Length: 363
Image: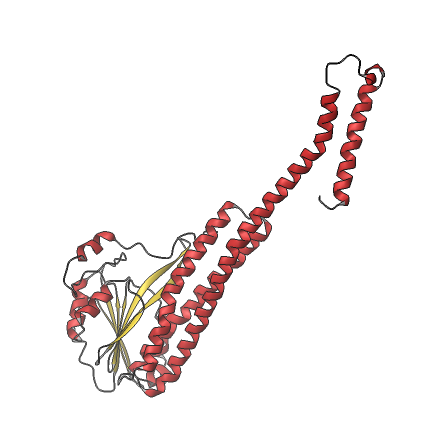
């Protein structure tokens, strides 16, 4: 079992972080470790009766020219081409600090309202089958009046279900505004956490089975790995409650009142996930106690066996030592069957002690 054997935190390149030290706020440097050859841009325009999908590798059109009643979703993969991200920021008048947060994929999930647009940061969790571990990836979202911009570190199929839903004529996404698309993107990120929580539950069950049967030193490493992973999960999931609560609490012209029921649904999902994580964390701490208790009981059993063996041999050692003394006038030496008799007595004593221990249920 190598699941959770490593921490979920991605090792960010320290050299890139060092380059940002001392630079003015808003300086655009990509500090992530996921590098795509080309930044890809998917532009999806749709209304109730219209759908169009285009793909670009550079800024070929003015993305801000959006026709009336049209909803535009700009999905950007790859953040290492800073000039493309900077150009997008100029098109939509994004604050330099927003662009800086987008290019720094170690942000805590958060929400900021800039009046004419809303900026949100989330963490997508994925399972790397080859490495046997979970990975974090930052997803940044921008909600405007009739557009949504999503920034991902790499080209994945994570949002493919959303594309499929948008292509369905008369679907709910096609009937609603940009705020509903914003909600749908958040919803799929949150729903993906249930898959992660399920993996955590499966790993807990596997370790519990090992703890009950035969805990090994490797089991302790797995428990500590699971503990670190649960802490990382909580750090990524818990702040989303604050994000959704802020969306519900603050009034924004970009979010219609009818969206509140959908936001409450996401909040309920996050609450359930957080509750499960807290329960799993308690179970993990209990597993540490269970491991120490199992190891202690195992040691006690070993010591009990060794003590009983030593106790049985105490009278036998006494007899062997007594009759092993180099004296000529020990009375039993004149008996022809003295040696077999002493052996027989020693066997009787050993069997009697074993019977006594079994009667007391000590063995």
